Length: 379
Image (tube, rainbow, N blue to C red; front, side, top):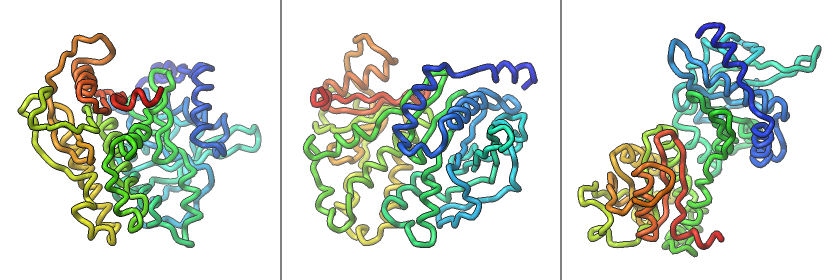
């Protein structure tokens, strides 16, 4: 990129309204404000500018973990590897600030650049220190899940993990910046506008709550393994986020409780399958005593479902959270006016006709919630 083009991109600034909106979402995700407001906004704005640049005509795709505390001597747990650089000072987060040679290290899904903002005493401004790269052996979702279920806690590094989980993650992808409180995405910046990442978990909770018609089979195992439905809920949330990030688009239909073999609203050429995401424990009770094996099972199902979502058509889950159809093409009236293309409208019409609910994920990563049967309960 020429120096002239670089200056034109740097001139892009967030509006006052966008900054105010960003801070509101930041306060909601981080009530303790781990990073100062001006630092957070500066990193957000510079990340956005950086996301618009290219390296040899390749769009920028990278990730930063911005530390709220110095972790030079952090005791890293199993499941991650930290590779330290010689401390690299960065005045700005730009390709012209010695960042270009590092930026694509973090283009892979499980690798993150680790950056710490530091104040300069003379003029009270801050610069950045690039500490190194953090590699998650499996995925950040898997690591967080093991932490949430107590598999990573010990006196040796529980305090250090607290420092790590107070960090903020910035994901840059070809003009788009997603900000996460570790594994919880709370802000999206695209085309100069601030959006909330869709609250997938809200609808998932409704779907799984037995008061809304779910079978309640999780409670059979509650005393043995804790809040069992969290495993399924986390897996579904990971699946939806992964499909969104991979940007191939799909529709996921839930709470389908009709007879699939005689369903009048789908073409018969769909893929017949049964992925027992919600009933793993129902048929594999021995996994209760072996949590690592249980996590591997869920991760394998996640990978399978994400792969199946790449087929042309929707995914349908029954009311036991079992995937029962993939590659589904709907036979519905889509003459209704509204946003989205024919796939979006047909999925919405199917949900309306079958009293189900679901998520429609477009090819640009946007997630649309169709509440269906729960819509009236929210009013």
